[in-house]
Each structure stands twice: as C-alpha cells, then as structure tokens.
Image (cartoon, rainbow, N blue to C red; front, side):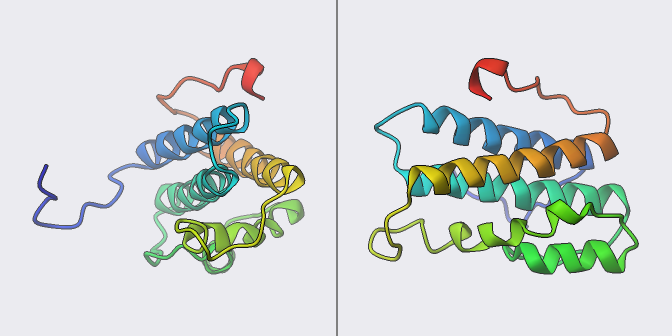
Length: 146
C-alpha cells in the first residue's frame, strides 16, 4: 500500500474521536492478553488521549499543532477557551508513551499499576471528549473490557 501524496488530517471531530475510542479499546484488549507488551498498551492509551484532544480542538475549530505532546495540546485547549476539568491536567504523564515505548531498550519496566493508570487516564479524557462531541460512530467499549 502506498501512502497518500498529501498528509491527511482528521476530517471531522467524530472521526478523530472514533480513532481515539479504537485506541482505548486496543489498550483494554491488550491488558487482558499476556502476549501484548505493556509498552504497547500504554502507547495505545496515550494515542487515545492525543486523538481525543485533537478531536475536541477540531470540534472547537481551534488550530492545533501536529504533536504527540499532550501538555502542549492541553495548553492549546486552554488558549482556545476550552474548559478542561482539573483532573485531566495530569494526563500529560502519558506523553512519553507516544514515542519512547515504541522500540525496545528505551524504557524501564512498565508495571501493572502503570498500565492501569494509563487506561484510567485515557478513560477520563474520552468521557470528557464524548460529552463535548456527542455524535460518535464507534460503538461503546463493552463493560467486560472496562
């Protein structure tokens, strides 16, 4: 498969949120499978958060950088006047999972607690984003995976 000639961005907030929800589902499925590396579980949790913030910014018609830095996305949200609950301001701890965990040797051991925290933080962000962007196409994550 050849990549498109131009870099394609999310075309709608709903599309961005659908991808965020899919990443969160992958993280939760991975948590239940002993063959899935903890780094990849945390990577998908980080991706869910990143895509959710970008979807909210797109929904709010705010410009945002193409970045993996969640703190930077939080700052852009605040500058755009998007109300962010206090408990979401801690999710920037997921930023290192975006790049550093994608390859062996760049990360210390990730614990069960780290995986749980990453998924819980992603859940919080996705709940907030779904409340702002009500028309998502993807099905909810089954309660058996929550």
